[in-house]
Length: 246
Ligand SMILES: Nc1ncnc2c1ncn2[C@@H]1O[C@H](COP(=O)(O)OP(=O)(O)OP(=O)(O)O)[C@@H](O)[C@H]1O
Image (spheres, rainbow, N blue to C red):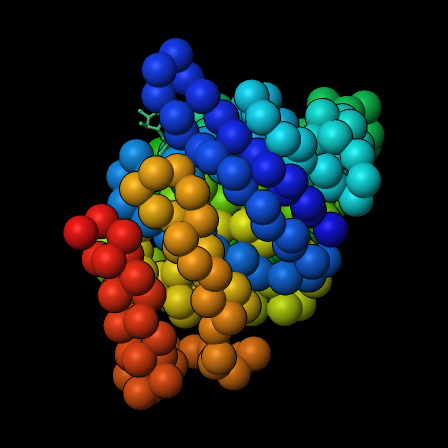
């Protein structure tokens, strides 16, 4: 369980986060949505131990994020996939465990690559793969690391809309299969609603404006985008954002 208790972050004169109280249960898929500069990345960095809060505390199963990170319980997937350009897809997936002194588990890595749609690309280098394919490798890498918690910051931000939709469906499938806790930051309202069990809407002041329980089937495919339930919830989240920024 991830517990944020009164978390605030100040950067010399800029209040990026204020009074964030949020509890994320194990195996939950939580999205964080809001416009540029509202503090989404800072929130994710605070959860991941990459940014120390100036107020309040973050706990992951009772531990500090630094302890959780040292135990490889946190996996990061960022907009820029941060793969090593000279390594193959398989080597990029196994690399972090090797760094920790383990024997590479190539077969397991290749099964994971197949499960994210990359069968046949095991030996390809990042430059030989599209942006969406490289993000799939980065997701496989985080899962291979054995992290219980995936922290994803705009991982599809640079991809075209169709690829984003496809990857969204895949990430939900992976999440269901692997039983991970996911915190996923995006500025896309439809993406935030499609992926989430709960969607956290950030307000202009670096605060949580509202948390929506998303009422959609657990198993979701592209058909969800056309459903009335989906469109109504997208509209409700949009209304909250517009009210907050009015
Ligand atoms: N290292 C830093 N030093 C100073 N100010 C910062 C730093 N990091 C973030 N900020 C400021 O904190 C606020 C929140 O930034 P943050 O990156 O968390 O927003 P965001 O919602 O993720 O934006 P985006 O969607 O553009 O990535 C912004 O005003 C930003 O300029």
